[in-house]
Length: 212
View 1 (cartoon, helix red, strand yellow):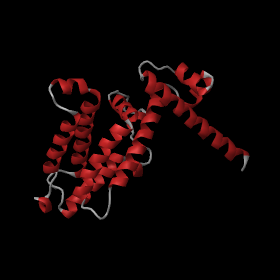
View 2 (tube, rainbow, N blue to C red):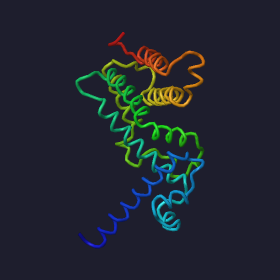
View 3 (cartoon, helix red, strand yellow):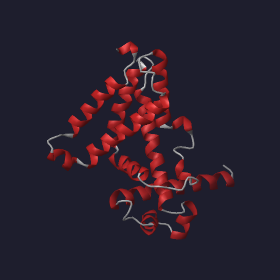
C-alpha cells in the first residue's frame, strides 16, 4: 500500500470514527444539547482536528442522516422482490419503514429532527444522497412507476407525487406513533391501531385496475 493510499484510508477511518462519536453524543444528549466539544472529547480528538472534517454540528447531523438513509435504502431493497407485484412490494416497503423506525429509532428521530430544520438552498444539506442509486425515496418512486405500468397501482397520480405523498404521510404517522405515544394513549388509540389504519387507507388509495 502506498503512502497516499494509506493516508486516505486513515482519513476515511477518522471521518467514520468522528461520526460514531457524534452518534453516541447526539443520541444520548439530544442534538440541541450536544456540542462540538462533547464530540471532540468522545472521539479523543482536538476541537481543531474535528473542524478539519466537519464545519459544525449540522454537518455531523447530516452525516448521521446519510447513514440512516443508507440503512433504510437497504431495508427497502430487501423488501422488494420480482416474484411479487409492484403493489405488494409497495406494501412491504411500508412495513420495512415501520421496522426501520422501531428497530433504528435513534436514526429515525435524527431524520425527523434534520428534516424539521431549514437550510439555505445552496447548502449541501439540500441534497438527499450523493449516490441517487441508494436513495430510498427514489427506490419507492421507481416501484410505483413499475406498478403503474403493470396496472397494479393507480396511474392518475404521477409516480413522483405519489412517492412523496406516501413518504411524507408514512413518516408523519410513524412520528406520531413513536414520539407522541402519551397523546395517543389519552385518546385510547394505540400506535399499532394507528399504523394498521394508515396502511388500510393506503392499500385502497394506491390500488390500480388489476387490484380493483
